[in-house]
Length: 487
Ligand code: ADP
Ligand code: MG
Image 1 (spheres, rainbow, N blue to C red):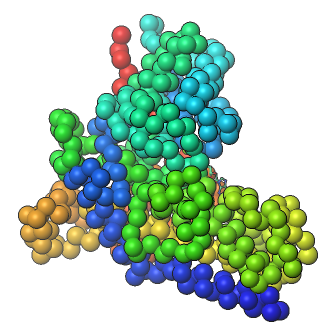
Image 2: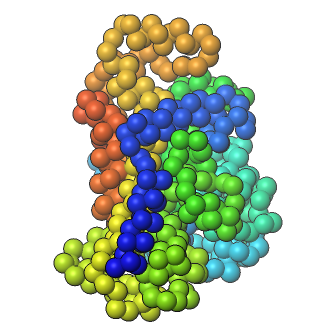
Image 3: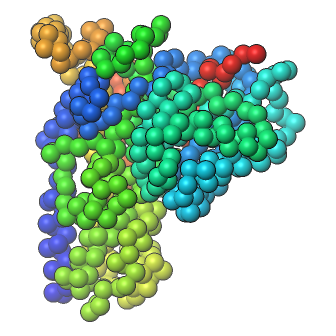
């Protein structure tokens, strides 16, 4: 009993420190919109990199032919081929393969990494069936989804700025990742063209837009988290290039690195960050994404084991090991519907050899999962509403002339530069989301949607959130199609 009491005290303290009340979320929304603005104005002026992607037009359904995508960015590496049949045929045929990335490749040399990708790609292409056809004389065109921050210099070239999500391949930093992959493919005696280098968020946006014209925002909630959106090119004041004909530019926010003093940071976040491969960076990602949520839970359980003895007189050895609790296991415990919480018991036993937990202790474990999940999901929701606010689609400007004048005034000090056309109220906006965390963790998805709807109020009738499953893969192939070199 005294253990349960002491543990409950730790729980309540943690819960309070993780506050995501509507009041606090509104501050996060405002901070996100302000950081977005700052990041568009100057390099390094914001925690958001706001990277121009060189994607100035999105798929419209007319794409035709056979295209490929390779996707590197998290837990698994994927290769995909898709036969596109234009507006009538759409996606005629598609096939993909997925291989886990060996840990030594995530921490090795650039050559090892790109040789690994090239080898998988080449063997995938070699196993192509009769139902996939290139046009006569068409070369193989590839969309390369590379989900790390890249300083792009063209639609198909860009230098890696830094690694995230557990990758550390030091000699790749500063390299053109397209040239590196191209070299590895050629060294295997093959000729293919990488026609587009894209972030997974951009693939998700493109994959969503292919089916629905109202898609304006792409979000990833998987191993990591990030978002991109369609910006007016003229609003990207740091952009030195020519304004594209479309007048638009997709911006990769790298929102994983977002930071604001309004974020509810706790001792858990501090120790997790200190022990991570990228300390001091990607703090938003570390509160939200699948790579980290389980470890946040584990760190609270460690405190409960050490200070309240919830798992007996000795702290189970493995519990002290970073990342030993995976987010899928956290979600299974969190969503255990059995009265006796037997799934919680089973997971504690199989992962940590913790036996004979009381129902009371198991309930506390579930509550810890709930606090961590809810905080991450609500912060992701606030991030989305921040983007909607930046592009004038959050409803805050819908009620007419007075507000519009206010915005025009603030235009003069260069703060609000959105298109006045967007203030007309009933524009629909769709947010396309991809990633295993959002797809498989029901409570996360529900908490996130609740936060978006709470924040938007009335305006939520014009906003919808859609799962764009594998959108990032197909999106990459679609962008390869629209940026193909026609021979
Ligand atoms: P990536 O970001 O590597 O492309 P995915 O989009 O496939 O990855 O998402 C994989 C991540 O999703 C895993 O690392 C895990 O954190 C999370 N995930 C997968 N399944 C579940 C689940 N059942 N519950 C919670 N999180 C999950
Ligand atoms: Mg992915």
